[in-house]
Every structure is written in structure tokens, then in C-alpha cells.
Amino acid sequence: MQNSRSIKIQEQDKEIEYKLLASIEELEQKGQITKWIDDHDILLYEYEGKIKAISNICRHFGGPVGYHKMKNGTFTCLWHNWQFSGKDGSCLTHPGLPLREYELKIVDNEIYINLLG
Image 1 (tube, rainbow, N blue to C red):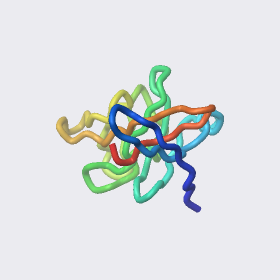
Image 2 (image 1 turned 90 degrees about the horizontal axis):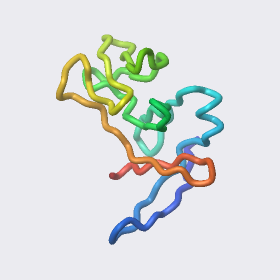
Image 3 (image 1 turned 180 degrees about the horizontal axis):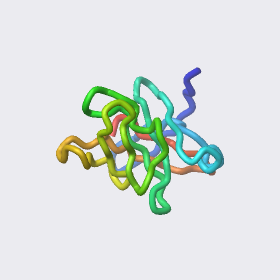
Image 4 (image 1 turned 30 degrees about the vertical axis):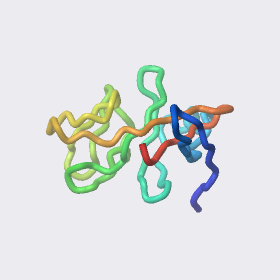
């Protein structure tokens, strides 16, 4: 079941739609979350006190980056062990092939994601 709740936020000269991804409580309970929203496979987690969201699809063959929990600030893809930084999604195995990082907004303890930015 896809969640279609969203909010629109005025930023500079345009209105940007942010889709509901999860609640703060859900993230705290699970530690990290993977979720599909509008054809985007998202990995949501906390890194050094900041909530982050990156693509959950490895740049190598599309394996799940967030299948295992982050260890020492690094996610390791289940399929071929490519490694990605929790700081910004940069690829530690093959520099220059980062994962997409998504912009988030937190409103009333709910985490919203900008899929288009």
C-alpha cells in the first residue's frame, strides 16, 4: 500500500511537494527503514544525529544497500559488497558512483521527502 500523504512547502519562488516517508517514532523504533514511494526505493536512517535518506538501490547491479544495518558509518550492498557512506551516500568502493541523497523536511514529528529535487 502506497502512502500518498504530502505537504507543499514554498521555497524561494516555487512550491515543492514533500511526500510522507515515516514518523520519527517509527525511525527510532526500527533504527533504519527502507520504503518504496512513487518508484523510489528509499533508505531512511540517522547518521551523527541527522536524519538522512538515500537511494536504496546499489549503483552496481541494483542490489539493496540497506538490507543490513549500517556498520561503522557504512552500508554494504547485499549482492556484491559495494560500500556506501552513511554521511552522504558516496561510494567507498568505487568513488564517483554515489547514491542519490534526498532532501527531507520534518513537520510535526513526521518525515517528508522531496522526490523531485
